[in-house]
Image (cartoon, rainbow, N blue to C red):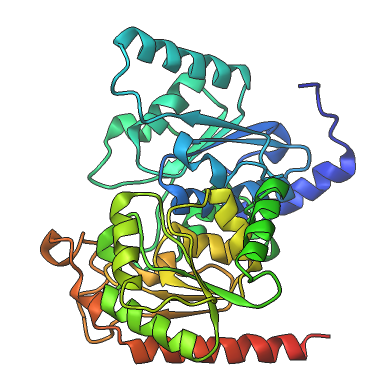
Length: 393
């Protein structure tokens, strides 16, 4: 990369951005940052929620290149994002490979990362691999969250900056952005939005499919009843009853799910009691992530549970009705979009973070959210978004 010339006005601007860090003895020097690596080893939705970090860095440091290091199966969450210069991936499906092949793959990745000459590494999870990568890259600055009792001296010495998160629950996007605040940067509120790019190919495929289904010219809802983690699912009978009500009210529906057999079986159970309908399309397990993103952008409303598609809907600006059980709605609620979040208020134990009650894969608090509550939330959100649309100039 050619040397970037930093003008005097730019230096002044960058200095102003450090105002909140003026009393921070170890605030970074933004003018020294040419390339940044953001590490996020997590699943689809978690990776998407890291998107504002790239956006804010680009807004704060003109000319900076920001790369991502993620798992390969989450690539579609960030690919084509204009805030990201390069995406490096780790394939978790390497168990069947020989030791020599694994070492070769790891060495190639490390060589590629070293070739980028990062000035700053931002590690957004507790994964030890991120700390190891940081040590091997030897950037000028490196920041990660402090994990008392979980990481020792080795972890602390892997980074130049460590930050804590409040004990009080706070949205995951803000927790990610705390890494930048710890460096002395001021986060512009206007740059906190999610960014997800579906792409023209996926958009064209969805346009064609909607037209063939007879839904190309009418509003429709996307219903995504499942999650990768099935203990987050609402009871199938409740979802069936909700779909019946929505169809009776004249709404067109597209039902989606992940490709796993378990998820598709749940969709089959939900739809089995329902008669065929021209305005009910079952696309479960048949869409790529990019196609799902394109579908969500076209949708009038999203209805589902705490899942990656819920976050994708928020990123696409689609209003969301979401049902939460064991997971924390304050940390994982739909971000910066019109929404209704439903929880079982009678369960004081939630959010517990367990894989169902007693880790038994069944969450009683999910079943405690009634069909009436969800149906009413849909009506309220539709009325709210309609009122806002009419009020817009």
